Length: 317
Ligand SMILES: NC(=O)c1ccc[n+]([C@@H]2O[C@H](COP(=O)([O-])OP(=O)(O)OC[C@H]3O[C@@H](n4cnc5c(N)ncnc54)[C@H](OP(=O)(O)O)[C@@H]3O)[C@@H](O)[C@H]2O)c1
Image (cartoon, rainbow, N blue to C red; front, side, top):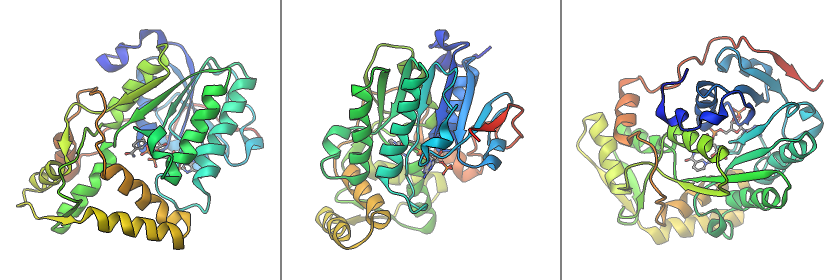
């Protein structure tokens, strides 16, 4: 039985049959752990058979491609709740945000509709409705939110700020000797751990909420995050300021003359780092502790992964 108050706050999840898409990612792994801890019967959707080893024993692994809907047949059979943390964060497969964040999730939704799924939990991003106007990635995510909202399946959109995993870039830059921040570094964000987002997703699944903005417990300026990164390395801070106008101009220029996989990540980064990104605080994980664990080489916080999954591995074929 789980002793984690975060998962214990969703007691009615026990015994529920759930599917996690995006399960091999940073958030997805935490979601799987939280759902297993909450007593759910967990199936994960992965795209390669060898990814089955990534999950705790007992997890049912379904192999399918979200970009080829025929391969998903059967993935949601018997499933009560779908959790989707599926999306492109690092462009490398030659597919677009529309292919994965929109159409991939849409394929899952259509399947969920046809098999009687009762709730769909989708992870988008804070300020999605605003950011969709200018950011290609968010436009694809929010186009899926439109479809989800119009669907007969009950749904909730969880909108996190930035994950600790992404704040790791500050740690990497600090380790190399200098951290670059946009403008004065005075804008704020309350970054959140994968574990705390996962807990918020479970609570959202178990509620009537339709839209859940969520951030971590500490509101920090980017300057403060840079300093925390240097502190973790026990190095004196060397913070460089890139003029906001310059980075915005570069991002705009790249959007004109480079393909999506080049400009997309910078366009997203520029948009979120040049505005306030604070959401209602949740959870109890602190970024400074995460940085300290990463520097100490003990950052792997999801025990159980790496062992062969004892659950079934299957696909639609
Ligand atoms: N990172 C942040 O700070 C942040 C903040 C707010 C919202 N979000 C959103 O939260 C979600 C999870 O983020 P994350 O940081 O956990 O992402 P992540 O670690 O990059 O994981 C992404 C997941 O999507 C899957 N995926 C990506 N491209 C795919 C494709 N072409 N076909 C099939 N599967 C594909 C990956 O599978 P493979 O392992 O097989 O590649 C992985 O399971 C995303 O939707 C993201 O936009 C992230």
